[in-house]
Length: 269
Image (cartoon, rainbow, N blue to C red; front, side, top):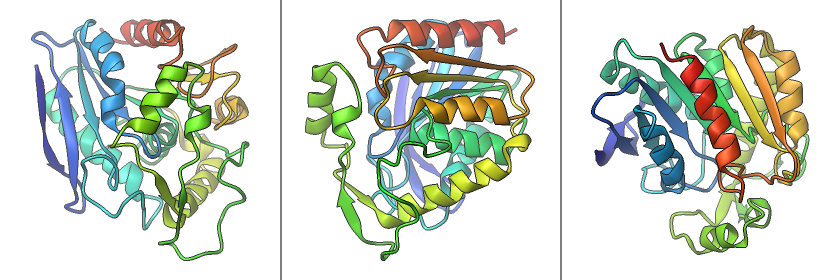
């Protein structure tokens, strides 16, 4: 059963929230999408998780999709992970007694990593896909940017999202994919990445780190360095040869999705 509506996050901003719920759930997953995109691009992932009797919660980041907030903008680096925390707390209440996981892609992976570092133990596990955690590939140029926070530049991410041309075409045509990125958002990510480098030891949650070897937007070195730096005793890293940034949209997407499902199932009692 799917429901859609608005959710009031920690500061009262209304986030667009979708729940894909099953009749006899074994667990729940909160999906956190990437920069300039929206939760609707994860329908297939949600369906695969539902087939495993897992409830799925998805939301549009503030300033993205159908959520409130200044477009593609953050005024503080903590806002994105505070939003994740608010959704996780809501999902946890609705799934009391069941394991709860957070899956984040790209900027959503950055958000999930910040969440796990700042709020250890709130989730039973974290799954990262192409997560920006070290900024080894400076796709937005050198950060921080010395310019007004409300200055915007074109979204040039589309060329590297996926090796499937149909996915790239759909991305470019999607009205909910934002076409500009603010300096404020980029500089907030810079601050957050610096935090993740300094506080890597505080990341202790079970984690599955996934990355495409041919990712042209976020270097797979980000994931390898994160894997080496964090303190989690239960951690796994998988790099997929020939895959681009959006591994869950690649021609062979069922391989990483299947790996995620296997990892989740081993941790659902």
